[in-house]
Length: 488
Image (cartoon, rainbow, N blue to C red; front, side):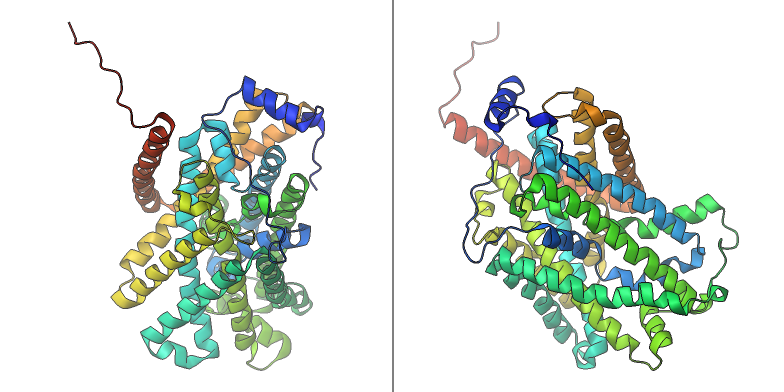
């Protein structure tokens, strides 16, 4: 558990802020969040709901295929998962430390801008926003596949599939429009409902465990390091969403304390489900069946209870899981542009907030995801859709890299108002581990996604130039610059 240090706050908060701003001016004034609308529809998230936000966003629909995805590499894949969990925990600790220092909505955007200036902050917000709405479109398409198991008529025509995908996107959108009170309630219910069947397999399945079903520890022809690296390339993005509580820090009760705790608890709970669930499936099903299965959790439930209703149960769990993930990601997709817009780095329309939710940002995000979904089904070609989804595997890592680098920056500066010297060594080791984990994510994305993702970042530079020019015009007016003397 993270315990917020009192060392940086020995003086009154106002005095600290004034001293820091005078001695270490930032590129532009860092605006604080406005007071929350304390209506019946706007509620701050407590520790349980903040934890559910992290858990729900990390564990989406992909978990139901994970055992089959990594089984070809042998049970050494569990070692790869354990290594990744350590990296994710390091990143979670970094977000907790950064939230203690600056508990505002925006998470990685706020941390990058505070440490490195407007441009770094903009890149964090831009990349996170693109990742969020493209990922939402991908999640909706995946959900339609599971809905087809429950209601076969949906998948008989592409337009019925498109309509179902749009409904899956807009239901969480309407929950967000209703206010943070409903976002939190939906997230709590969805997390509980999706984790019940997962824990049923992860824990109950251990009673049906047969070590004879386990495949080889190491696949033929693979070195231990090669197998771990290959499995890790598939598993690397299993912990995307670790930043969820930090991104919504402005909506969390006592964020200096609860953001770090919610992040750590969310990662640990997700890790337990990932590791125990995969281990239980490996032990309940013969290795060859796991490798060839398209629904390993369904097959595991059938082994536990007999019959063939496991597929229906897991399909419902997957749909609920994706709806919960969309509920959380829809909120987060609006938080980064909201924070950036307050600082003049995104269009001001993104600052509109009702019932504790940046409603305009939510609406724009859902509309963009819907347009991408319609294009996917109308064009009948997965080229553009696949390109965007692939690009997000790199874009998602940019905020992580910048946040970890921001923590390293503060530690190297050694400023007493920003660093607890009593845990300097520990924090330094954790920050370096988090940065290494983020770099591993970049490497795991592959050459093509990194190349294409950099092009998307460069496209964002044009938006940054436009917004920066507007800020300069607003600050200096439209008066022409004084004439320069002619060159001799």
